[in-house]
Image (tube, rainbow, N blue to C red; front, side, top):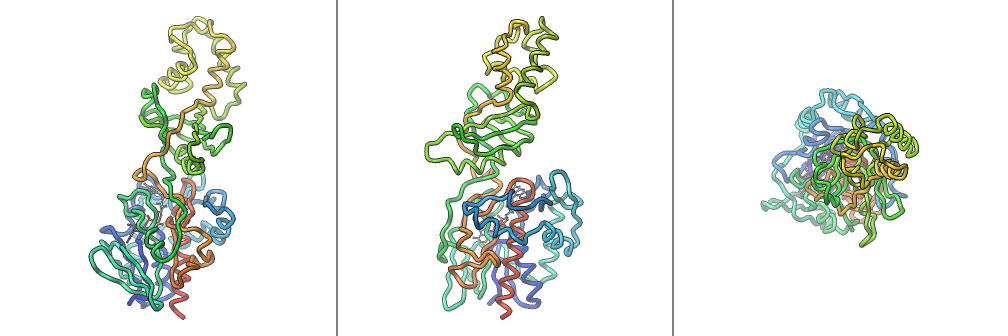
Length: 413
Ligand SMILES: Cc1cc2nc3c(=O)[nH]c(=O)nc-3n(C[C@H](O)[C@H](O)[C@H](O)COP(=O)(O)OP(=O)(O)OC[C@H]3O[C@@H](n4cnc5c(N)ncnc54)[C@H](O)[C@@H]3O)c2cc1C
């Protein structure tokens, strides 16, 4: 029987295993992973570069359905904790724009290499191809059953099976079912950090264009979320970091409520300044046509499509014929171009799962279950998600370390 059984070999599970092993040298710690290797998702993070934490990690970058407890959950989780964890493993890290922290060599595979070496040196019993399908607790002992008929027992279990996002990388939602088997509830889950599907009727020509833009998600007059960055126009809607950042807020829509993404192609400009600029372009080139009115500003195909959406046609029309009202209409559209949102891309394309095991069911100082003695939960399975930028891995490492530390302390008693 293992001292500690960890279910799920992602960031949270590995951090939990290494932390527990440090406190319990020589004791059996078993890590069960359903895929053929641990850390598959880590390899895919940050476009293969692994944005492993963020220097600005703090409550304003995280979300949960329980805002009150979120702050408490994130207490004593400074980015320094992640840097120290990796520094001890010999991984050199470097900060880039907006506080994003990457391994110095910019390779997620290097992060995995140092983690694998550490697991080996700590003598952690890593069992891959081991999908846990059922778990029960009887007489103070947990028994986990796997899809291939094996069973593993332990006094302490750390459940770090992730959420439902990117199932090809391992997390298929089975972690929620295991937690429920043991008596936990689950806040409804939704795909987050995922592209927005929009009604692109007549906008197919925008496919493949990238633009520095603002993106505001509106439900009627109510602003749900806002971000600025590189927006990507696709055949199904809007992608890129701003679209992904705001996507989680769609879960807040009431049934049947519609929402619109407003794209601001001049996020640094006030509407009036943009109008004056358009007016000056008209004045400077009255004989020129609409085809060149926006030349040198935004992508040509974007410009033509916005002009069309503003009802300014044909492109051969001379600039001097534009009225002040038409220029205002164009400026308004360049600042807030509406894309009716029809949903998000599926789980397959999501980076994280919002929702999960409610914070109120955990002792947040230890990540211990309040319902089941000896059970700990950490990482994405818990109802916490972060912004793009290293925040989700930050939560996974830190909550995993917290659970590993507490489970080891308990096991040592
Ligand atoms: C493409 C992509 C890029 C990303 N990039 C970044 C980034 O750069 N920075 C950032 O902060 N975040 C990023 N994220 C999010 C981040 O990777 C996750 O939030 C984080 O890895 C979650 O860690 P976890 O350990 O909780 O869950 P996971 O990483 O999902 O790990 C859970 C593990 O449990 C295993 N498992 C599941 N069920 C069972 C079971 N029944 N039995 C046994 N094993 C099981 C899974 O196979 C998996 O290995 C990215 C996500 C994706 C999909």
